[in-house]
Length: 176
Image (cartoon, rainbow, N blue to C red; front, side):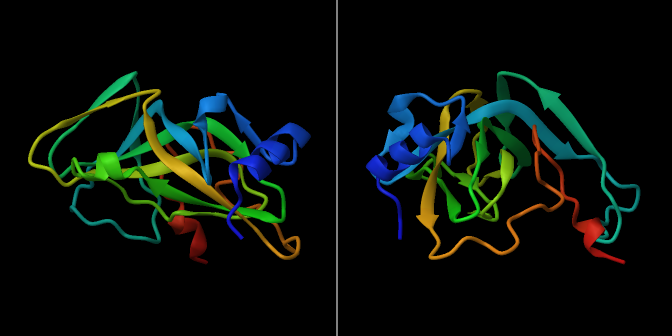
C-alpha cells in the first residue's frame, strides 16, 4: 500500500521514518520530494576503455553547489536528505516529470530496501542536446513509500548502508 501524506507525517513524527533535513513543504499527497545534494562523482577513464564488473573503479568526486551536465553525460549525484527506513517500509525513487521533459533522466535502481539508511545516490543522464545546469537544493525527485505486510526478516545491511555523498558502484564486491 502506498502511504499518504498523513501516514508519512505520522511516521516522521514518531521517528519510525527519518528524513533529515526535511521541510514540511517537501511532503506531497503520496510522496516526499528529495533535493539534489552538492556531491557529484564521475567515472575516471580506464587505460583500455573497458569497465570490468569484477574490478573496482575510481571516481572523481566534485563538491559544488552547481554542476554543468553536458549532453550525453552521465554523473552520480546525491540527495541532500539522509533517510532511515524501518524494516517494514520500502521506498521507490522517482524522477520529476518536469525535469524529464528537459531531457534529464534519473537512472537509478529506483528501489530502497527496508532497513536502508543513508543518502540516496542518483544516476543522472542528460539526453538533451543542451547542457543542463544542476543546482544543489533543487527538487530532483520524490520518494514514494509502501508499507510491507510484515517486517523484513533480513533488513538491508549491504554495501551501501550508511552511504554519504555520490557513492560509486561496488558491484565488484559481488564477485568471489
